[in-house]
Image (cartoon, rainbow, N blue to C red; front, side, top):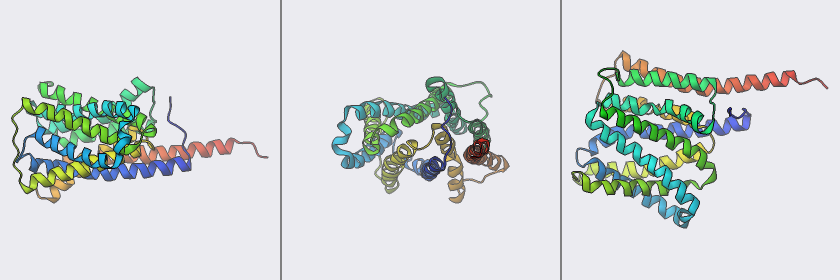
Length: 309
């Protein structure tokens, strides 16, 4: 099935949704720096448990009984499982792979979204979307500096690849469920699922929590802003745009992370990183503006073919 035809109303709605997604992607870009500081004072599973419990409590106060609708519970449970798998597979995978390889392989969800969408739901993205996906994937390779060809894939690489698939499935299923469910209750159920599953992992890992100010701020920021608010915005936006566009826009996350890292003095970017970031931005622009222009040209061509009356 091809993409729906373009119209001024649809284009305006999609551009608003894409703008909202770009904003939350900028927020997500900050979390790498925030979490890096927090994990110096606590273990990953304790941090995830606290983060998602706080976000879940905040949304539960808003959603209340709407969370208990059976359909919302089923959809939120499935989405929550894939969201948790994305987090845990990336975390465990980092034990036996490098951060750059992890970042690149995780970012491959931008490729898996159109491929899985085509395989599972018969959704054929536009040509401009495919071009944007390729540009973004190549840009991720340059930005992260990863060379996954060296020595083949390690066990950590395979786990991280599973993380990318989990994130891709979460994006695709959110696209299907977002128009049919209330945003806040659907996200609240997901956050509870991730919080509970993270807590169940605690007995099997070494736990450590130091209630330092940086840890508390990180839990609050990631729980309320980067999880509760951002996932609500993503769910709202996915009722108005496509999964491929979501994946492309979210591929901007490492670009924002690099900008924040440079701004805070953690690192300097070389030519390779700038090229990678430029390719990712170009991929998003090609998919966004290219699709818009193609829709306009098709509409104009159709109008010119109409007989005069």
